[in-house]
Length: 34
Image (cartoon, rainbow, N blue to C red; front, side):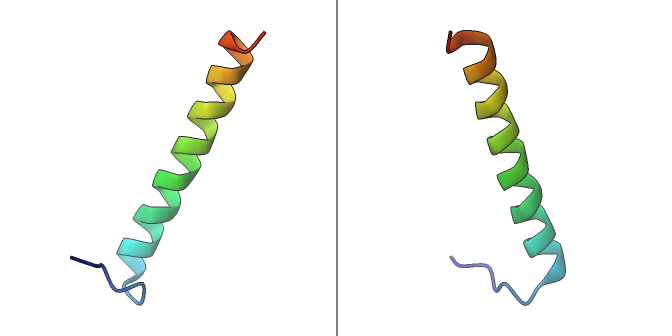
């Protein structure tokens, strides 16, 4: 099932998820990527 991107809640949720994933990877690389 695809979520229509015209839905502002779905778009904001997708954006929040993307930001969370990026921040998680940045923190993981900072802590364990030495």
